[in-house]
Amino acid sequence: MTARFPDRPLLILFGLLLAALSLRQASFAIPQEKIDPKSDYQYRKDYAQVDGIMKETEPQKRADMLLAFAKEHPQSRMIPYVSGYYSQIVATNAQAGAWPKVIAMNEAFLALVPDDKAALGSLLGAYFQTNNFAKAVEAGEKIYASTPDKGVAYVLAKSYLQLKNTEKFLPYAEKLVAELPIEQSYEFALPVAGVHASKKDLAKASEYASKVMNAFGEKPPQGVDAKAWKQSQSFAFGLMGAGAYEKKDYAKAIEYYQKASAASPQADEPYYVIGMSKWRSQDLEGAMAALAKVVVLNKTFAPKAKEYLEQLYKPLHNNTLDGLEEVLAKAKAELGISG
Image (cartoon, rainbow, N blue to C red):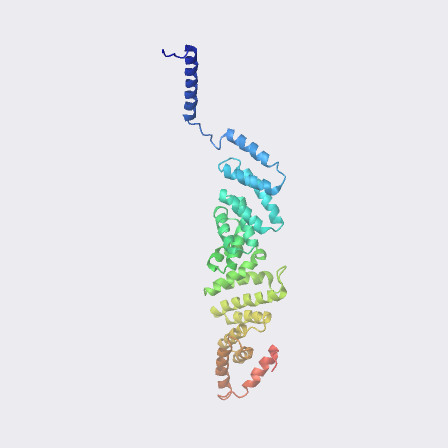
């Protein structure tokens, strides 16, 4: 039996199909040109996509869509606009005091756009509002490194003070005191004075305390409780007195410590330094009267004050302590101590 070959027209058609198939496969093998994410063409596409997202009326859904866009198009020229739209939704939650929500939303956006200033600033505020001071300084330091803003410096100073990190607190607080009127920065000036006092730099401690007392004196700053202000006065005048005592200006030391004792009559340190200053000024009667008050208050300085009081009293009273009880009784009466 003789084999039959397909008709020629069919062979031609079959060949054409094979050629077309080969060309199609070859077209798949040719690499497609990648579109530049910052090109005008891609920008128009991204713009249209974001414009569509902004038509979503439900805020949280819109925020989720913006977040998805940032994830899909991290290099898009629309990212700054997406950040602005997203931060508006976050701000609404901040105004409502929904701080955990604010934190979660900002952290989600920063995971995609790590250096976004709007999200970092909002996150800083939320951490501060929720007393998460460790996280607040972490965010604040990042912002301040690129934008040395006074508002950020304020949050950093307050946060470091709460964290009891005086070394980190000091430069921000000193900058605020230097650049702002003392009426706005007094809340940092006294802690700064305290830090310098702890470093045994009484001259600087006195300088900062003086700034506050010269500005306010007896009148407390607006919004500050009068009783709390008395404590601040006692602290500030005490530092000023300590600075004067270190310089051997005993008259000034007495003046400042008398103001400190007037603000806090039950504190024993002012009377102790007044006593020592009067002793060094050869006012022995005045020294004994002040030291007697320290003794009857019976606090930190009482043992040393008792020792010095007796040293002063004996030579003036035939080397005896006869009559000393009367001195102590007078001190009690002046301080309003009964018994």
